[in-house]
Length: 97
Image (cartoon, rainbow, N blue to C red; front, side, top):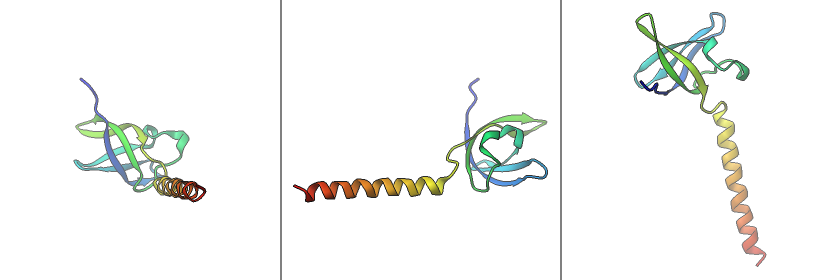
């Protein structure tokens, strides 16, 4: 049986207790901080993640959690800056002809 990765967003995380919930289209799913990539810091609200779901005493638990885009605002800003540089370069190359 192939395990399928699901996508969701961190809905809430309690650093004192070390657990939280990921919001998905199917509903909220529990996660423990030990299943988060430790080297990348604590989960942040609305952070996009992908994960596997495992049975946890009749309920589901997110395991093998991966960050999809750890800093979406920065990524969007970089994409816009790169796009603007490309447009500027194209305009300057046409101007030099």
